[in-house]
Image (cartoon, rainbow, N blue to C red):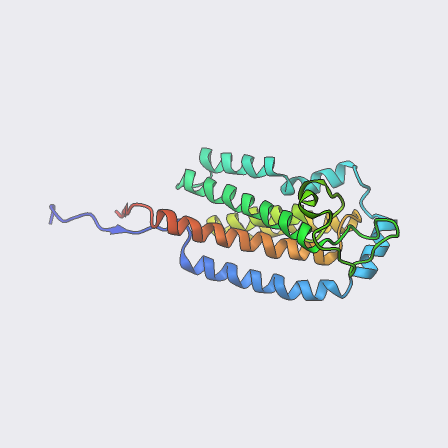
Length: 226
């Protein structure tokens, strides 16, 4: 049988079972969102006055790093360099998830109009909403909007993409993103429900990016099996 054909197997960038598992994480985030809203007032009032993590300090800066797009690009570059066998598609998935997770919170903040904990004159609480502040100019000019957290959204989007690509380390990815989310609350910049909503948006962005990748590129070419 020396002339027998080499067996092949298809190798998707993200297997369907991982997508289903990601949907489970999204459902958990939705449940946590409802629970977080119950402690918004207490946590927001406490940490806006006496932050446990000083704003602008080295600890806040470090913990917020996963919520910066430059870090997303660095992770994508690492995947191209040595992190994944489907290098460019894996990097594209991470970048796509990051972009989606930036657009959605940007629009949601403007549409919902929730300000940062007890900011404004007079100070506003967690359940005071002013949708579409300043009309269309508010998309670029209104500061201190907080629902959902952009840092948490991006951190969880990248974590979600890495969970799909390298699930063995999924608890590490989630822990890093969770540290970013917790920092935003302890700094007094967000309510708990802001960061949980950010986690929901981020994980959903990773799932959407994986779906788009599958629709655009389908399965990668078959790989030979020895």
